[in-house]
Length: 167
Image (cartoon, rainbow, N blue to C red):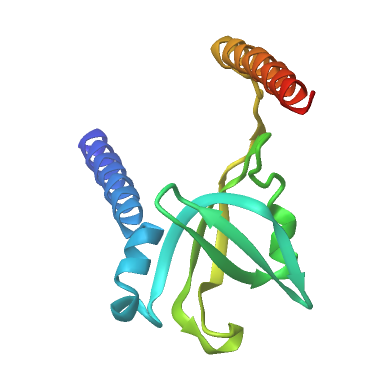
């Protein structure tokens, strides 16, 4: 009897965790959806997720951090001390930390000159960023060398033609 109660309890708890996780995932909105529905979403609390890109731009006791979710990029206004949790920003040689931000969406923020932004209430680092290997495909190198040779030949022909016409 006790065994059956424990199994039922464990199953119920497991289902609640599964449902809670799916509800949280459904609450995340794409940045492009915010931009396309800016008027309807203005002033709403939203949850977005994206890669931290560029660098933190410090402004007194706050900072701007830009995120990119693959559909769009947007500035996030956050307390300066929160930026210390972001270790890697995306650039040509790095994939930035993956962040989940909950905050208030502004389609024309009066505090920031009418810019589209999100004022963060909470930020979570979902996945740490990492360095990427930068490699150039061999085909691009070969094509580049061939084009350089072609430009050199055409340059020599051009300068010989100028010498003939001047002489």
